[in-house]
Image 1 (cartoon, rainbow, N blue to C red):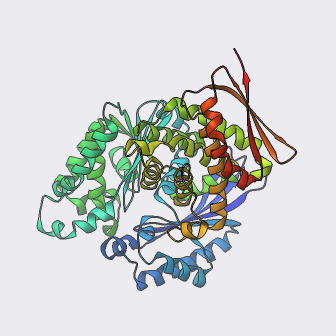
Image 2: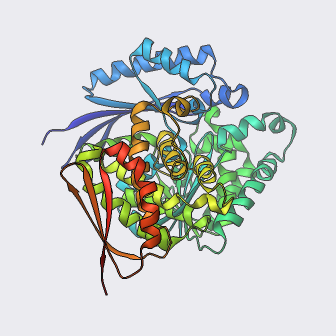
Length: 514
């Protein structure tokens, strides 16, 4: 069977990577070449908020080399992505344009939730025991140069994912003066981390029993090889790690970096990494560490193979996005019974209107998330719940969604009640294009109708059938044993936008049962 040659370019905080993969349905995914180039983009971003001209020119030269290598290996397709160092730089739009014009490579800036979801996909694809591991209390810990991502799993469900902006390079830069003035450098790093860790434990760990930490990072494999030099394993016990940590502190960073086979320039990031791991072990109470040799490049390759149907995933990633949204809704005490009924009603209408809205499975997922989160703003202010829901969604990461998708969801929820803003007014304060605006209009119209059908929040409807007649009437036939007077009274008002968007007049008919 034919193989596909795919390249992944990962522009990180302190390293730029090119990985070339051979993808096939029979053999799966195989790395055929891996090129690393050390450059601390994050040093500029985290210190000044901008990436300087020198580093930009260097990055362009690296990309030209990558293009030559990709050509030599017969790469058919590629994806180049940047993370927090570029994402947080104030001049990243200029940087992307210069790279495109000089090298022909289009660099994509991932939102944090997209980046972590890709890493999580790589883990799930590559680990035979992934499903078994996440059925018990598990935390996936992804330590990067700019931040730490903590994702909690329990009983096969993603409970929550949170980002702490204290990665290894950011910690090193913030404490660069301190490192030269004290022998208590590790303790100072701990002090800086402690408040964030305590807050995280109080809000998200509570009584959760975390048995394993799945660590994703650049240095944990070096540590594992040092601890288990006489045997191959992908696990470190809590006791083994603490023993190693104590040895590291006693012998010093430079000496231990040499023993681990890590260069001096990379060695400066070792201590912040170890302190992060140690504090997480202490806060979670995990008994063992599982080492995962995954990176963003692997996630890009697995995502490409999945989308091109070269490989079929063993894990339901879409369900993780939905579960993450359910847990956000739970945090803000939304009405679960109401959202369950709305979910069924909204998705039924979406499926029946396929030829009218022209949207796909991804937009169906966004609609489902809108239903789950549409009432979360009531937790803050019942009189302005739609606006508060918008604010909550824009301030909350939903793993797997891009920033643009999050903005689409937030606006649909905001327009669930009140007037829909004209495109020009909405676009003035966002990056939304006309195509996204049309999606917002189409899904808002469905959300409003679904909400109107359970206006009393009493879940009166047992079943629903949707039929389009003569291409201008959408008949909604509901099965109920309850009085629908309130729903029928509120329905025409909520149907106005729907008729405007779809040129279909919604008609509600009740079939009495029981």
